[in-house]
Image (cartoon, rainbow, N blue to C red; front, side, top):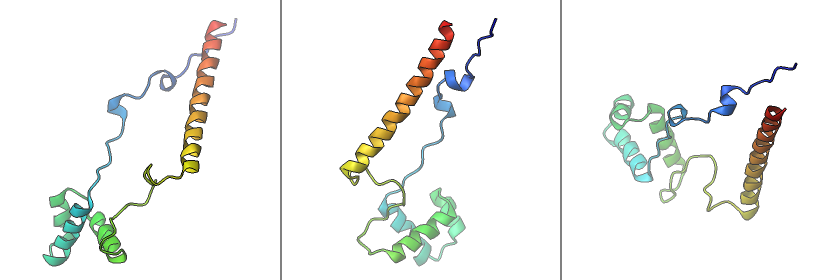
Length: 119
């Protein structure tokens, strides 16, 4: 008689809130510009200022570099995925299609699991 293979814990138990990562902190433009201006005008040590503000020291340098390269009116924006407002319709549809494919793959795996249990 063939022994049924049970799924692993990872397949059965969904991720709990305690196992998720900490949400990424976001800072508005005003905070970034004030932090960089404090770094430059007060001549304060970058390490001490970063500790006071609760950020990493290299963030101050990155923000300062971006401010130098950009026009003063342009908001500081990190590289990465554009906001949903900026996505074109085709990009949005591609993202939705990829999500649907992922959901379909999960459902197929679950169907195969249930079929194995019935045998």
